Image 1 (spheres, one colour):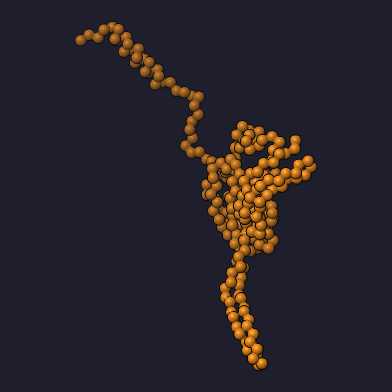
Image 2 (spheres, helix red, strand yellow; image 1 turned 180 degrees about the vertical axis):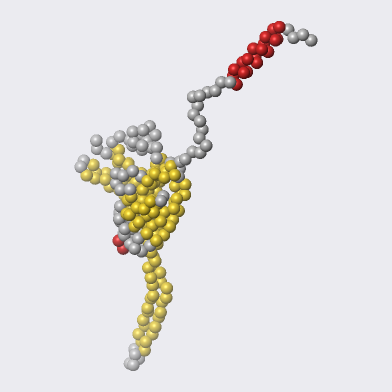
Length: 226
C-alpha cells in the first residue's frame, strides 16, 4: 500500500521535531547537590555559681571554652558557634563535676545552651536514742545523717532560625522598629519569675513574663524610645 506524500511529509516533520526537543537542555537550572549540609549556631552560658564549682570548661564541637559564672562563650558581641546540625556531645568540667550530655541541635536554628545546677538534701539515716540519767530523768535525742546531692544539667533554648536576621524580610517580624524583645531563662532554683520591668531614661514598663526554674518566658515586647 502506497503512503500518500502528505503523510510522508508529516512523518518526516514530526521525527525532526522529536529529535530537536530531546536534544534541548535547560542550562539555567542549578544542579541538585548530592548532599545538603545544614548548620546550626549556639552559645554556651554558665549559670553555675561559685558554690557549685564556678568556672566551667565546656568542650563542644571539638573546641574548649572556659566560661566564668554568669558569662557565655563566645562572649558578648562575638558570633555564635557555627556547626553541622544534628546530635552533638557537650562535656562540662569544673572543680565539682565532670559530665557529658547530648544536645539535639535542630536544623538551621540559633540557640543558647544553659549549664545549670541544683542541690537536693537527702536523709540517709535517723537514730533515736533515750538516755536515763542517775536521777531517773529521761533524755530523748535524735541524730540525722544526711548529705547534699548536687546535680548538673545542660538545657537547650532555641531562639530563632539562623537566617532570620535584622534588616531582612525573613526577620522583619522579629525586629520591628522602635521595639525591644526580651526572653528570660530562669537558671536559679531559688526563685521564679512572674514579671519583667524595663526602665531607664524615658521608659518604665512592666509586663508579665512567667519563668519557673529551668523555664523560658518566651519573647516579650517593650516599646523602645527612638
